Length: 211
Image (cartoon, rainbow, N blue to C red; front, side, top):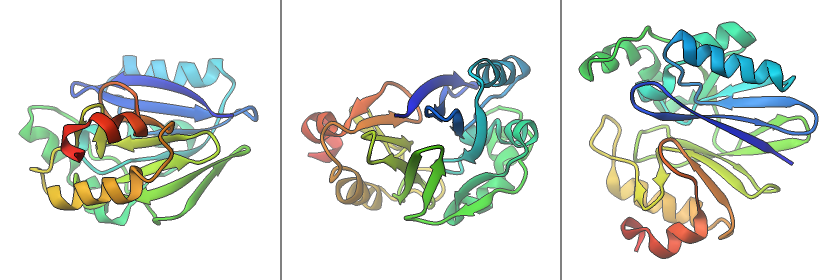
């Protein structure tokens, strides 16, 4: 069974997730930490829980989700992984952050994810679901056995990702959500990149963007 720890990091309020199971193997999704205090909180939690981080994952390539990549890669000796559609954003993260008055360094080059790929840790598996529209390479990480999906900025409680940034396409986002996420079981827990958790069933019934 997967355990979940959520941190909310950096000036944009990104949800960073640590997922692990009974083997103590763990993945970190969107590290996102932007200062030493946030870095310490993340690393301290991993150490206190006795976790072994085996994968660093990004949901997409917008700068706020890439903050923390460099720290996490150095700390755990791994490369963050991202869909190829968003790989170009990695080298542009510092410039994009400057548009919002935020300072950061470019993270190290990420490694490509493949849609449909299965990310294994311990006894658990996350399947990569490509849902473009918020960005060209946006992905969700779905665990069928534990009925959860980490969706980044694809889907939120009562809303969907903005599509006015580079790589955005509203029609593509909505069709991808309906075809690839709303087809998951209603009880699937949705862990978004910002804000509160929700479920697939709740968003299918009440999300005004999906009616």
